Length: 328
Image (cartoon, rainbow, N blue to C red):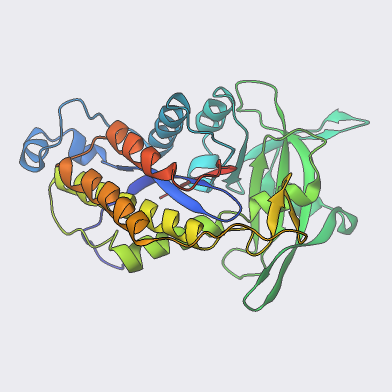
């Protein structure tokens, strides 16, 4: 902002299928200047059992909570603020889940060479500068509003010295071409036989999460809370996410991913027409009552309560999540 200004920073967890995204948990990040100040805590009603946690610690706590609640988590996707943390990556593998996480260019890695074994450690920026032209390949991952989305990628196997275990992971480097950020770096724990196009797709899949939060802000006022109360913030966020779950449920019912074609064994078939998914008046009233009841009956939902509430509404969508995104 160019000046000292008020802000509220949250860590959030969302699940996604190929056609829908749904935020299921969100937690306010409190710096130590707040958690260690008893007068401030008392003034804004922060519970005594809320400790200071870094953003990667909050994200890992939410992922663990969702996993224990039985929510099917797919590949965890996160930006470099989380992916650079070795403890965060190790925590995901212990769930056990896989990740596709952004990392900083200063991260040290060993390149895994089939003939020479592990090469000397070097930063990602140094490694990228030494790559030969034949290591780069043009990949196309989706059709955007301005045409086919494509970029050059380099993919190779590496090991990170800071990791608790000697895991061999994928390093994905994307050439952006922008002056301030010409390259992006990702680490992915998927097996070595994973198709490279799938790695590229996962590296670029977080754009749907950003789009989802834009909708929450522009349509439902996610960022419009201007209070200074911890319970008030949780109540506002819980109401917004419950309403967004209602929007997703209505959209998925009214506009089936299969369109006019029936989905059979995970593939589209034009031989049969899909059944009608039009919402009737009673359906809409029932959905509204569910969302309004969740938002109005609980004055301040703690994280576990929000997770259960959003899981109940998420069940209306009817398709299991295939990926998970963490953002801030």
